[in-house]
Image (cartoon, rainbow, N blue to C red; front, side, top):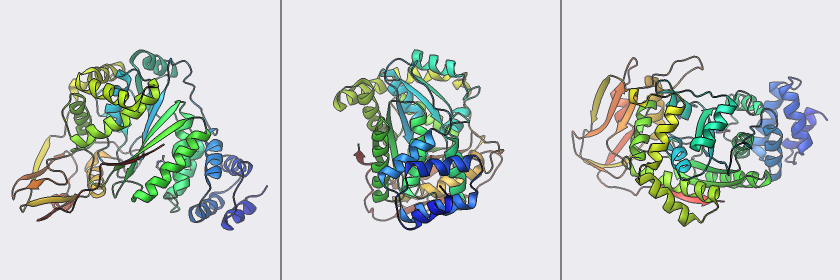
Amino acid sequence: MNMIDIINKKRLKQDLTKEEFQFVIDGYLNKEIPDYQVSALLMAICLNGMTYKETSDLTGVMLKSGDQIDLSKIKGRKVDKHSTGGVGDKITLILGPLVASCGVKVAKMSGRGLGHTGGTIDKLESIPGFQVELKQEEFINQVNKLGFALVSQSGNLVPADKKLYALRDVTGTVESIPLIASSIMSKKCASGADKIVIDVKVGEGALVKTLEDARTLAQYMVHIGKEHGKETVCVLTRMSEPLGFAIGNALEVQEAMDVLQDKGPEDVKKIVIELGKYMVSMGLDISISEAEKLVKTHLKDGSAYDTFLKFVKAQGGEIENLSFAPKVFSIKSSKNGIVNHIDAYKLGILVHQMGAGRETLEDEIDYGVGIVLSKKVGDFVLENEELMKVYLNKKDVKLNDLINCFSIENDFTNQTPLIYEVIK
Ligand code: URA
């Protein structure tokens, strides 16, 4: 086999075989195939696509490139959750404890922030003392005992994806749908859960901007899941405005706790219930409507919050010491009107620049900075009324840049749905 033939085959829109993918991934990881040849193949895939079979074969090869987590010592069905990433996305912090309180086992591995979107691990590390690394045995024991543990993704989970993703990032090939599907599903399959629920974010604040692309991505992932024996459900949800009110690590943890105490923003609550009902239905083998009832009850009666507190304590976190940045400013509207749009992408970037995210891997995060919206799309606002509170520490932000993320008009041209559709 030879790499030039494989590149030419894809350039000519022919399908690649599993053996060819194995050759590429092995050669790339062993440094026998150089970056420039893999880049050429990635671009050919980007332009000419891959079939379901090719994408599933590539996923199978990638997932075997490193550790495959063995969760067989956890009793009961293990259900995992993933989000394709958005601004203000604190859903995992609520959903994990909620679903666990219903009796489903969630042994979760998460990543750090990527670009303008935050990462669940960074959010948890805003809780003083919280340990994101557990020994395999501690991880398993905690899931058996509490139903939920969350750790930083193992360093050797799908090394093929780490290398390919870094190359995609600098070769304009991140946006290929089959490449996104194989990247996500290889990590999900290697993480060891039996069933998977994926929140596919759609809109300007997300990786996938259109409903059509989100649908295609979901269909690929559901298909790959089936091929690898992991039933997968994808829920397509809105990511044009930020999710909830809070953006920034500690502020999002606080908002997650509000929702767990039956307060907090309605959009977050609705997505939690939607994803939760599929996780619980698959985890306990009960109907969707029974699962929905259970999820709503556990969110209301405090059992999910109780599981959250136990989970934080078990991993060393001192939630009572959660703190926010010291300089707090209120940003006010310059006119009366209706909020038509809040630019999630731009706000995500600004909060990142305020110190909530890293520019390089070595950067330290300022956990307490961020913003809390006072208005959401569709809300009326009066001149001088508050649009948001800004929490700053060492770095500054231009207040005008924040205000420009809001578009306030006299009329309201309707909001897109929060939950578009479910693909399974
Ligand atoms: N998230 C991933 O894990 N992989 C991608 O390719 C895109 C988003």
